[in-house]
Length: 120
Image 1 (spheres, rainbow, N blue to C red):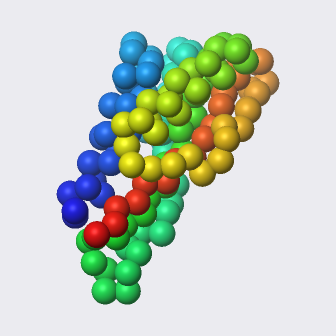
Image 2: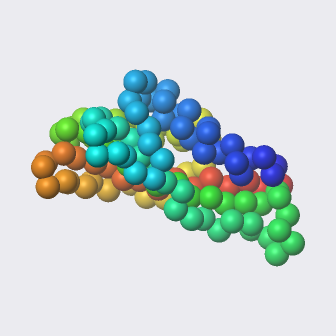
């Protein structure tokens, strides 16, 4: 299971790609010249090892996924597609419903956290 910790991000990116083919996915932040729509993935925590003996059979990691588009409906539609693909593809759950974000120039985003856990 040790390998799982490091491949969950790769699996997450693959699930996003299946939901939004042709949309760029960035880690942590998008460059200023990036064009919308786009997705940003950040590892934002989790419990780490779930057992005091640091057994590899129990590990929790949390990712934040931000889906951005030029308008609200596009952001919502793409965010829902990502959520469905991630939850269908990986053993994890959405920590909450996606939250809306509006940039000063009117572009829209939906931000949602997902938690993935291994158990022995």
